[in-house]
Image (cartoon, rainbow, N blue to C red; front, side):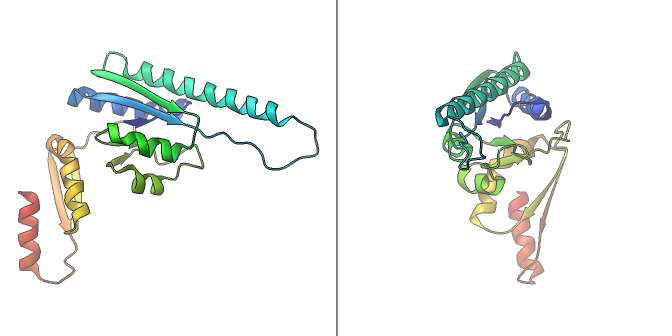
Length: 194
């Protein structure tokens, strides 16, 4: 699943999603949402609340259509299957809910919607999230660093990352030896590497 938005800043993320889809022969789901925003203040000019809401809805629909067109153009002929999901609602809850259909989520690190906080999304998605800054042009994943801590969450993260780990040329597992017992730490590292 890849978070999509209107505008050219997200095209590289779509190219990376297309590349991963091609490498894994995967289905790709594009997703976008934007909540309606009705101003809660009066600026001295008269206006109709209905006109403001209609204008806001039209802008949201236009934004979502543009994001869908960019997604479909970027994935055309590359992914085995593409799917599109969008809604005029809170992006955080919509995306988190729809993550049930994905193995992982590709997102950027600068969300254009103030209602979509990356930290909240990480906690609510229930899926691994690959955060790709807009400046990144290509995801090679040739060398991967695994920051290990012997917890349930870390074990789950490694399991979820196995497809990417299988593609890399070199993976390094690092752990801070908190109990200060190199023998115990070495045993854990051997298990993780295995």
